[in-house]
Image (cartoon, rainbow, N blue to C red; front, side, top):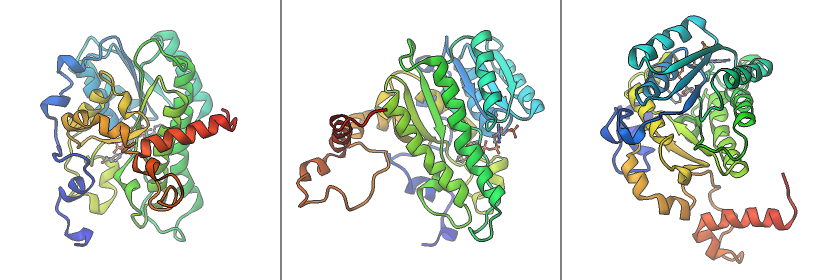
Length: 331
Ligand SMILES: NC(=O)c1ccc[n+]([C@@H]2O[C@H](COP(=O)([O-])OP(=O)(O)OC[C@H]3O[C@@H](n4cnc5c(N)ncnc54)[C@H](OP(=O)(O)O)[C@@H]3O)[C@@H](O)[C@H]2O)c1
């Protein structure tokens, strides 16, 4: 079956880790649930001036009762609109709007100084700001346009996360979560989307490094589903499949920031997946090191003396880390 014949739910089901998939808010991820309450938490959202940052993450963390939400993005009007939405949803939430470009190192560092002075140490970071270049082949692409996607989608999360970590330190006293936005386009090689798909694939490695270097912080690569926003509307074939609601993306992010989700650290998680099944399968996920990037074929195959490890990639991963320690590979 060609992609042109796919129904609106086929891609979501095809990429599902769980038997059930959801495309709208459901009880387990409802941010109004007492178990998901974000009281006492300071949440930083990049790209909060419209789209998912506004209608998904800001709105859902407001419902969940975060103490303060920091909104960043370039559009001052957009940030004000999001602030009004939060205040209408939950007037008890403190809101701090900081207009900035995520690729501007000085602006990002200054923003986190302001956050620290006005609110204290943040607990949740959502690296949501992103751009998508108009679809084009590699030879048809203009360098500046192609590279700008990497600047916003990779350099941006790097700068913001680094400033966030400078405040939290490696061993935060309170549970701390970093959510890095990826996209299902990173699962394949959709012609014309090379800079976007590549930059979103980089988030898997970035999250992996965060998890390896800051094991006390839960870092997850997050696919928010396919939601009708300025971005998804700019890609023709996404129009029919953009059926997920911003409430789904926001509610699942609140779920990720609640309770102990260490077992998902360094891994990818899709908003569409059934969280009850994910919870039930947590031992399997950790033991087999699932939901991570792993090369097909090749290394560790039978006959190389590590068959037992190959059966259990989680153990293999730990062995590589031990090997690095034994050989004095240090950070
Ligand atoms: N929508 C989907 O179906 C979908 C699916 C998979 C993944 N995603 C990911 O979800 C995230 C949000 O996407 P969206 O659909 O909500 O997109 P959107 O509606 O186009 O919103 C993008 C947000 O990023 C901000 N932004 C862009 N460049 C920026 C920069 N240089 N500095 C600071 N902020 C910047 C924009 O704010 P300003 O213009 O005000 O700066 C805006 O708030 C992206 O990372 C995207 O890749 C979306």
